[in-house]
Length: 197
Image (cartoon, rainbow, N blue to C red; front, side, top):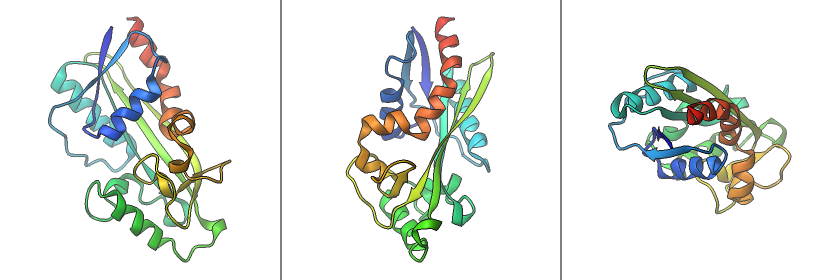
């Protein structure tokens, strides 16, 4: 088994990664990261994913997989974007982030609420290759939070082709359709190559 460290302390994200990976990449074991968190001072999703992956690879000596992800609202010029987790000013306060976003979009009509989730994955292999991919999940922002599944902005994001929010769809649908699922599909060849040695 080839061990790959997942460069996150976010348990929701770690669980989602494990559910999405499942048996998709035989011979790969995802291990938790318990090292120091680097300063994410990049200005793009790609830069921040690389900062995290490089730090985890350097700390553990293992190949490291990291993501940077967020929600991008068309009418807001792509914001919150890389600031999604701290949009309200407090990092990780999902309820405050949701409330602020809904408040900022309160006057926008249905046809102007386009948005997408972005997930950028970076795989850094010590002494080897670096791979960066992106997954996009298009949709729109609901007028109110709905649903009990998921986390972050899931209760206000209605994916393209659905009437339910990501939080109403449940983990099976979300894990098959999401921005992370799409990014994983793009990075799977690099992971399989790593696992097959």
